[in-house]
Length: 169
Image 1 (tube, rainbow, N blue to C red):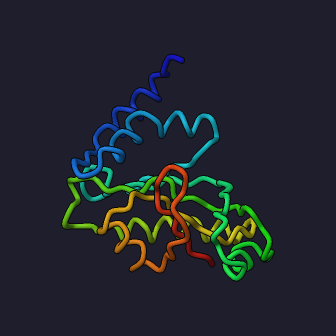
Image 2 (image 1 turned 60 degrees about the vertical axis):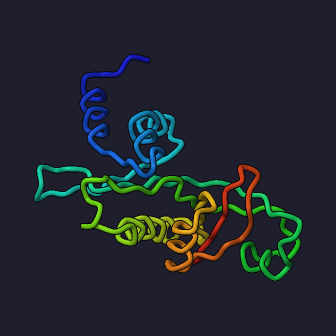
Image 3 (image 1 turned 90 degrees about the vertical axis):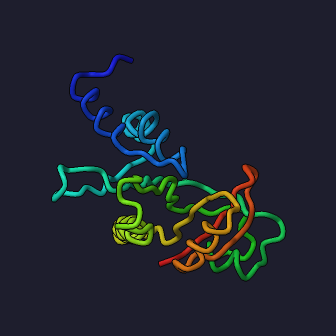
């Protein structure tokens, strides 16, 4: 599908974000954010620096996803997540992407971007009652520390070998 002139302008704007530490941050915005929006698959929100030429500070992407529970998950946790101690799956808001531009490294930390993402998740909760928020991330110490510090609980390692952590409202 050919991009419209407006869409091309949006893509050029999104290409201004850089993240050397996490190339997934860059590639998602540059290659997939607009496609996923058009398919109504995800919603991506940008944090914009209005004082600095409307540069992109960071972004987050949300979607609703069903997660399968591993067999070793206790009945207590199953009940906490779903209300049913025998559940095999649960629906959650997934913070699918969370990133910051290198231009704001040292000025804005990830906690701020996560706070905005969780604010949007709270709106979803208010509108439709979905109370579980999840993140999937590589098993890297600084990411584990980041999500645990922000009140996420490690649940399981998923098939894609990503840690699945959750928080609930």
